[in-house]
Length: 312
Image (cartoon, rainbow, N blue to C red; front, top):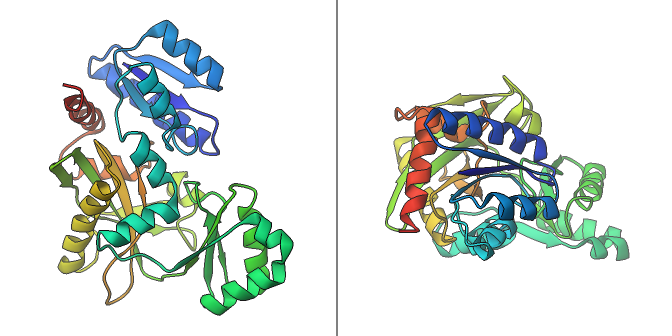
């Protein structure tokens, strides 16, 4: 069993923590683990060809890991792996495209606008005025294909909007501008493939900072996870149902984690789906699994067993 971790994305540090935790837990469960730290493409290919693992656990996050590229490599090398396939991984990484699939599945999504860096360079004032005409402040600006809130800005005025656009262009060739929705942040972990899919208990996220940013996600004590979430029974059922629908809509496999915001007195609004959720000590997926009696090593063992069914 090769555990691939690290990577070359902006989420490398998170992946290192996830990967080391996965290696330790799988070793405890009796797996013969090959720890495969991914530093560059050539090195990863050489190690996979040399080690010839019978299975791979992908503990990567962000680009060149969560976006279908490593999945493509493993398929070319005929190495089975944990998690979603190439298409689902690629779709999930593209927030705007995945939201189109969610909307078709009947899941509520936030209003959005895609902006290209070239458009900003050609006529910055025109683009800013267009955004202000469509959205009310505050406005969310983020790279369309990044995770862990990297490059995200919540703009409360025109100057912050400009700064947010300038930040986001450093991370992606597409900028996603969205309406800001105030409410309770929740997440739903999903386990399963095909028709056998289970939504785990809904977790409420209470960040210590003003919003659920990178520090809130990964710093010890950065956020509080409340299980079950303090939302209505009706919205709990909807969130779990929509998490499974989102998982199916993109063709995800094995496991995922779906993030929502729940405005007061309204139904949840989907934010995004994570096909390779974080597995650090402060991560949400392990907390959800623990709430149904699955400790960290047992959770990973179950994930691997679900994944292996695909290859039988």
